[in-house]
Image 1 (cartoon, rainbow, N blue to C red):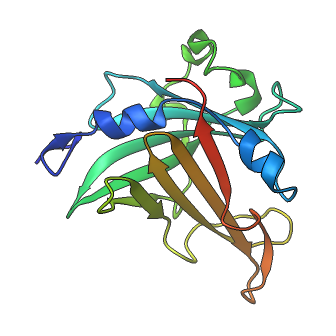
Image 2: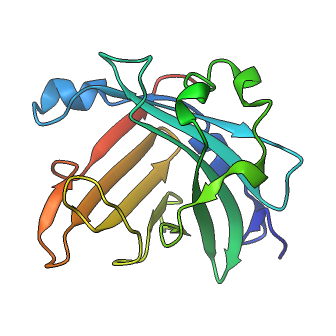
Length: 191
């Protein structure tokens, strides 16, 4: 089984689920712990194999021009029924804000310019429902934001939603910050 395929099925179905525009507005209306946010994801660099590259941008609905997270992910077949979702940051990420709407903004960016977030790789597995879930290895993803030292990221992906849960801990294992409850639930707003 080569890269770009999982269990004999091509990765495009998962990439189809990841690509699109999503909103947590419904969740924010039902639970005041959450702010309404948007998530936009687009496949990029179709000829940079193996696997697939994805540009992802998140912003609060109240501040769409100022994303709070911009990342590029590289998805490949990790074998044994797992997918590897490697996270990268971009130089001067703010220069690429809105690239989901205007892909030309990414024209000058190449994979060689990215910085891999070592230890932050997400391992995805397919659930009996057909959906995917994943997380990074606990204690391996460093962060230096708001007094935390390590970040644990969880992701659940279905055809109509992406759920993200971040938890950041200090060296004593005390939770310093993270998503409320079971994380942000982004529902698809575009087909």
